[in-house]
Length: 102
Image (cartoon, rainbow, N blue to C red; front, top):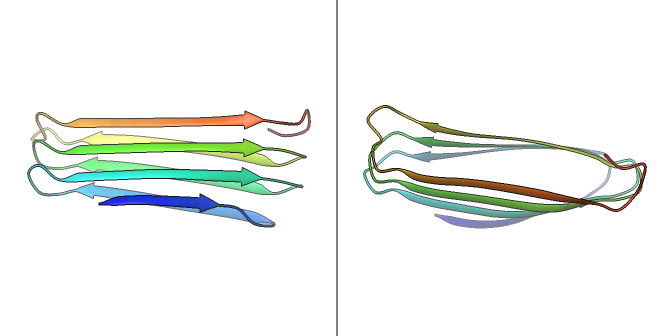
């Protein structure tokens, strides 16, 4: 599974993405971009669950916080005891373009 996303809009946004690698050698990739403007609030969550051996997952999120926007992110990688030889990565980066943004 490969997915690309863009998160933008007005008001509050909450997004919770869960990736489950259930079969042996399962693969998933999520690449997302987000832009916070005005007084927008964004809360982003990602969860990567590896249940079987040999799985691969890759999450990359990049974004911008401007004006007085607020962005929070929480990511989790869970590897079950039987999920040997798992390769999981998680990357997040936010550029802050305003003294009021957080």
